[in-house]
Length: 171
Image (cartoon, rainbow, N blue to C red; front, side, top):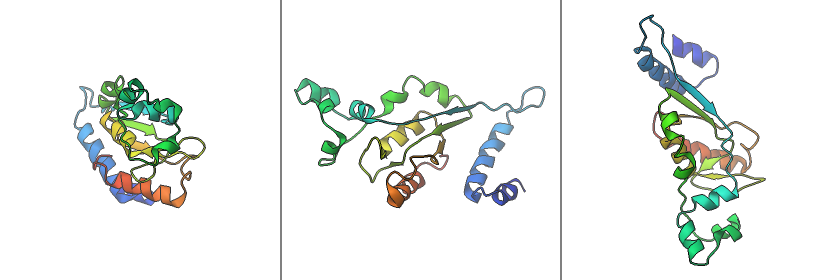
């Protein structure tokens, strides 16, 4: 009945089922008064700009030490070669907190996908590595509906949808 009510309000059935399954597992943990307490966190905006891409670029420090200063390049320079990012450093100091919550929500603010190259203002696209780092840091609910949702057009929306379809089931 709960799922039917959620679907009637416009929530996709698979999302409603996953949410209620998570709630039901949490609901088993009632306190001595019979109250279910849920630890919920919400943050935003996870708006990734070029300096963060540069810091997350795998091999960035080595490139700097070798005289190749990626900080002086633009993101467009990276489009010519395949690059790898590691965004775990961004969330390292807060991951334990978010992993300790029952539900952690983040406003992703930008498209997240593995198909489009990283791009910054005014037309954002965030590499999938950032989405996976957010997941590893404990986030399971990603808000994707905002003013940058259409920055890469319909193709960007489709790429983001495909990215999240491949994420673990609890995402």
